[in-house]
Image 1: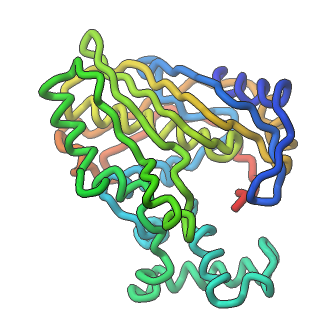
Image 2 (image 1 turned 30 degrees about the vertical axis):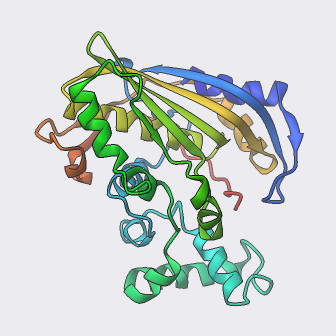
Amino acid sequence: MQQYHALMQHILDQGTLKENRTGINTISVFGYQMRFDLQEGFPLVTTKKVHLKSIIHELLWFLDGDTNIRYLVQNGVNIWNEWPFQNYLQENGLADKLPKYSEAWKEELAAFKTQIIEQEDFAKKWGELGPVYGRQWRNFEGVDQMRQLVEDLKKNPNSRRHIISAWNPKDIPVMAKSGLPPCHTLFQFYVADNKLSCQLYQRSADVFLGVPFNIASYALLTMMVAQVCDLELGDFVHTFGDAHLYENHLDQTKEQLSRDYRALPQMKINPNVKDLFAFKYEDFQLENYDPHPAIRAQVAV
């Protein structure tokens, strides 16, 4: 994963200190690109362990058009919890009483998760993120972009219009209430020599915590689309707007940069699945993943 390490080092060397909405400053650069040949292996970071279960379930959640965290929490995936939880605290007058990441805050978050799992009505009210990725992918003003994409790739692979947009200006204020406006905003597929490539434009990127997830998620999506369209694998191209490291991630970043690379794993997908929307968690098997230990860091909400 030399490309990823090069991005982190570039930010440390060339980045600008910036304030932002979270209250935790970042070191930031604007405009950067990485490229991964998907035939060389599955681009899952090896210099720290990445939670693949969360990546797969989140991607299936997107493809299902779901926008409520209940499915994720029920499957042990907690990467979206803190945004709706903060909204829950604010709406119930608890935000000032429970400082972020205090023991009382953590206890309340645990109770929140339990209610999301066990109480359907509670989940409907407080687990809903608004019209985020799944809604835009599957129902962008009435258009099922993902289904249309698969049909178009099969009928006209050389088209230059194989584009999915998650950025719907009308819905941005609603998304911002209890979730986030889309960070990975637009992606485009490209076919050449019967190989499928994907380029993602990401407007904002938490490089230490988020980007390893984003790389793996879009690489996996490309593999899934290639399979259902009878195409071979090309490249995943990752293009950034604001790529940043939070100040409270700098020690972790330097620790990761000190570690040696290991061979990329291989992702095996059930070859019998020919419908993009029929994949299940059990259809994916990662082989030969031998990462360094995980490095913990707090997400900036």
